[in-house]
Length: 181
Image (cartoon, rainbow, N blue to C red):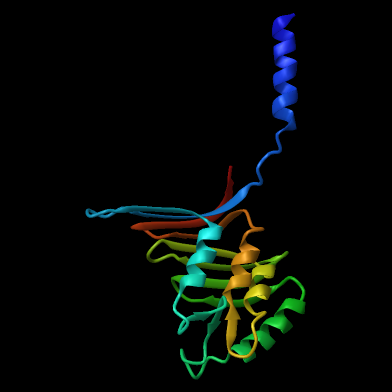
């Protein structure tokens, strides 16, 4: 009887404590297979990435926005933004396919994701990148020649799972987001 009372009181006590919200973390893992192999693991809350963005020099980032006018005169963010808006409104489809003797590169929309896949049959390299449309929307929400990194990172907080996977014969790279208590 005392054990039952203890169990009920513990359940009521701990049941009354609100659970902490899950915090999204970004993970980057790089494994090399050569003689001087290194193994790199980076595990950070996305909030730390946002703080690092705020601490970046104003020449590069200002208020979470990257100014692109100094990078390349041929790269016009306004044109990229307009192209993205057209692609965004297009139905699910394959946008680009480049097939060569030993390599195939594909860029496509699948559901609410942009997928970039590279299959290099000669070197055995495979690249898989998936980015939610909402993250690209957020990136292009800047004005003029600005990309809005702050909003893109904010959108990443809603993402779970793999973002980038790269495998060649010598190196594996994986970037993903999950939740930590």
